[in-house]
Image: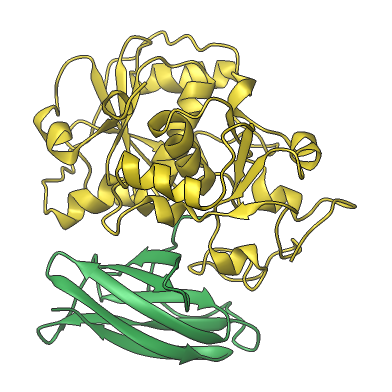
Length: 97
Length: 275
């Protein structure tokens, strides 16, 4: 079960009192990007996980509290965002161009 | 064995779709990727449903593997060309698995599904049905598969390569971060294991780094060429990626994949763990 589950959808069944969820959307030209690759990198820029965005451009990771970088690679371009995550829900948007 | 024997480019794959004697096989955990569009003529293998025993934690046995390949229309003398999502993790796992059961000619498409999609290459939704064959597998080649007792005995003696991310190696997280972090295993790694993440062997588009870059990577990390090697991850698919790099691309002589990996090791009673 290392394959990424379907992205997007509800957080039903996810315990936000223990999980550190990092989720959001990938955007380009004012619209969400489906099928974009999004990877989560640790503070040393090392790969931690990668998912493919849903038809609505959504991605979701289950990480741990701390600093992370999310980077997106899509046929239309690249983008990245650094964030500081805490236990619970952490939302962000990545713009690719 | 050299790189061109075991790895083909996306260009080569696209030019050779439909070539007799080649069977393209997509391997994913989630076959919805295949169903949404696959390489023209490729058949699909489900990492879990097709390749794992439905009851025990193990491979399907030789007879079941023969039945599976016969039903998929793969012959012993076909060249099997594997590709998949997740940077080819599961395709590399299938490569190792096909080798374990003695399939002669197996190749990976460099970059797998990811590079194919990023390049905007064509995908087909047409159903693929190949005529059934009479596939015959060999007895499992256990020279490329490690079990837990050998891993414990290898502490301090062999190259133990933990290919998970640094945060999994340190025990900060228990699974790749696209999965919920609720696992029964203890966090950490096998004592004396070196953390050389699989991702260091790949470019961002999923292709493998050059032979020169790969040789330098393992040399820098203190890989001892004089010792046998066991690679592991969480469930054995990312370590298949590294097994492919070490044995098939770099030609290291004695490399095993420990597919029990951390899910097994981190659950064992009494074994040493380092954190």
